[in-house]
Length: 327
Image 1 (cartoon, rainbow, N blue to C red):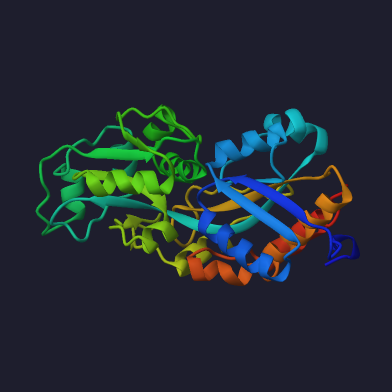
Image 2 (image 1 turned 135 degrees about the vertical axis):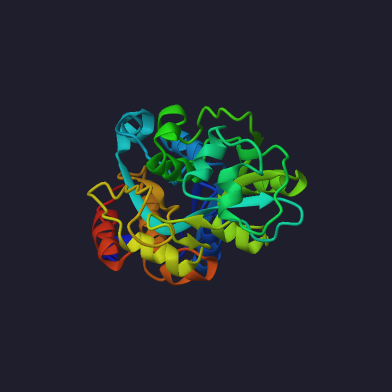
């Protein structure tokens, strides 16, 4: 922590954040712990989706944003983002998992080509031969497969379709990678992880996707997936850590690997979006103190919520940028 991260003990500062739902549980935990040690800094975070977070940063209506998706160079030049400059700070890694509702089926495998084929509409029935082949001994119904996706612009969706596009050329060409794809399956749509989970829970024959820690906390049925070696995997923190350890963080700190060499194959990183310049010294000092906490003490909280830590070598690079933020 540098000297210019000090906030006057009598000076109350409020930092407002908004964006990605993917790290929302983690960010709320960060906030509770941080504010217990820094009562003069009030931090708020609204989980409105990555797209909303980027829009609010561009509009200048927040102190920081949250995104799991690519913030483009064009977006970085827009509005207040372009005026103040942008710094993307990786805070955690985590996995996105397929959840399902298939009465009588307590264990399900959805193969490497099956998932993209379901979400692009090429597989439409639960007893499709490709699904049956991967699930010997399980009585799969002939009913229609319904898909449940995010209604909002979502970084969780971005990580999901980034993987499906990486492993399946048809999906890549027809759906592609974005926070709000043009789906071909007439899916059910819900806001946030909670909205998708609610749709899957109340609709038999449905498959959707949510962030792993949300699925674990809410005891949702998770299908196993395949890695590039054909191994069947259930999500775990250890596998998420393996995947993140293979990521190569460039100067922008934005990295997307839709099919990592090791670990759980649907794993990504989430970022806080900071300005490089703030309106006054109190705001810039508070932001630096907050983000220094997240990248040091805060990292010890990640694993308790099924998120990975950011590699220490990357954190040192990020902190050197954070501590150059100016009023």
